[in-house]
Length: 413
Image (cartoon, rainbow, N blue to C red):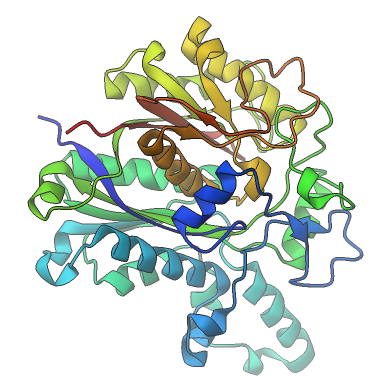
């Protein structure tokens, strides 16, 4: 018998706010978190805008010693897990630590420490390189510090699948609880790649928006005038629990995770498969896993990157997966307000999806002034919409052809 898996806590740091509820409220209000980059001098970069973590000052959260031992993407994960644990009310002193797992995705690790330490290597020599270089840059250390923060000693995994990293992390956590390997999971994703090298690399791919004079209008999913994505940074962490475990401790249940699907395009290192078949399959698998029909889906939080290829292919993907019902579903891209957090958005978007299901309100796709005729679904332009939602789907597509979808259902007891 399959075990049911519920969400009992969330934590987030995003370009909108520090905190899950505050971030969701701003997304619903259509507030953009895109600003001119001030983390470094971006004056020579083609794209000079980003979704920087709103109001983040590490001195407010970490002692100097801890700051030296943790890089920005790790710090974001710690802030998110602290909020998630508090939100869930989970008392780790009462848990078997080997029944609590950690699944945290990350796409890149810390480019910041690599850039800094490479400059030191070249200017001062190898003996001056920091002993924290390796631990600060490798992607798995976010999962490591999250587990240390909570004292979780169960399975500890870092998923690294580009923009699908956070979605895969949640999916694998869901499966582990469902199958009985663990009872609780700390799961999510984090990213902090707004650095000179990171921005330059995506500029070289011609992937970023260059609408530098209008930062808040630059992320334009499904719009004919979209010219690329906007980089973002931040983290999201969910507390997942087996239903009876959550009930026994009187946890507040936000929503239920009911389905997970994942595939690979086997097509191209950066571009999605134009046929959309492999992209559609995770939606079908997630619905099959959840034992639901397409007509039960009320909302899709799209990957919606604001790139020319992604948005039209994802529209095709949704149509292939849901058939005619695709035109009855409310779709939105919250990347229109947050930008694209690379390995982190899959979690922030799942948190937004869970809140949408719980509260019955769909965040809008802002800047959708001139809809692309090839993106002809109901993409919730400009304004949030109230709607009773039974099931939401949330998609992520990553460079290399990684596709993942999660189905989140309103909790009904």
